[in-house]
Length: 212
Length: 165
Image 1 (tube, chains in turn cyan, orange):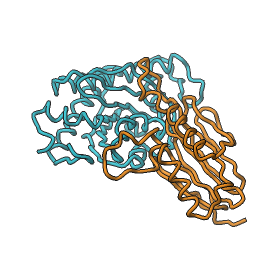
Image 2 (cartoon, rainbow over the protein chains, first blue to last red; image 1 turned 180 degrees about the horizontal axis):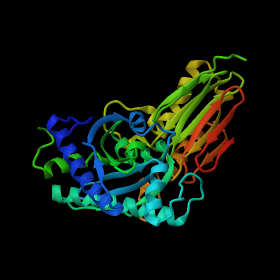
Image 3 (cartoon, one colour; image 1 turned 120 degrees about the vertical axis):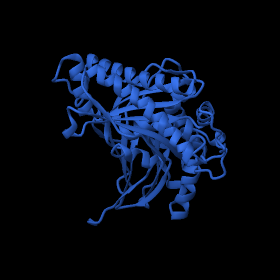
């Protein structure tokens, strides 16, 4: 496969479907966890520069609460689950039964951080298991890691593998929306960033040559 | 004081150059390293946002020199000289190189921040550019802004406030 990626509309559709199935399953898990409806938008597949990628969640300096999971196995890549600190605080508050929980000021409570890591773990686990079922690939999540910090600092970590060979990323972005906070625009992002070598693996597993 | 001060923004794997009274900044450094090379008497400064330690793995045909430590420092110096800065004035300040996430599997990829810092320092010492101050490592993001008039580097973090080095 040559680089930058030569992707046909078929390839883009497949990547969309990958995001759809993964995030769909994760939304179901989140919905069960919170016991209410979670809406999901149609995934967006973008081929974007690194700077553009930071703008997707508000620019490099914006503070986000993020859970990061590396994908290991037949294909490799990175998954980020991203919420604003306020949104993350709401979810964590509900999970630990302490509505006053806030990610705003460090030091953060151990319980809160642990709950958020677990939330990310459950969601990325369901994302990945759906992806694994769909592609029949052996995909395993690493232990999740959490960070509440600047967008630039966090997301570039998922670009390390990719950036060695490319100046653009293929970002599979799915937005989750919590019905309860609909008016407050609670929006969670799921980012899937396959490593460059893994696109071919994904396409082949779905019976499509990467050169088609 | 000139009222129309502009702040030149440097993106990821990008390089910029500025002369006083203007400022230069880059936002959201994580494992990346922001390197400032400046000529204080002439009030000229360049900032490069380095993402990776070395360009050896790059296979394409259009190398972005600002992305890799081994090529970025040389390129920055070349541009500064073109701009009229004098090499014997050159000094450097560096910030970044965090380890944003920790994993038990200590693969090289996870150590990217410290490796970036090592390589930047190696390249600077090769060109005999002294590092005046640094704020590297840790596990937090940084936004940095340099003033070529004073030679001060302002560093903003989410969890540890603002400082100047």
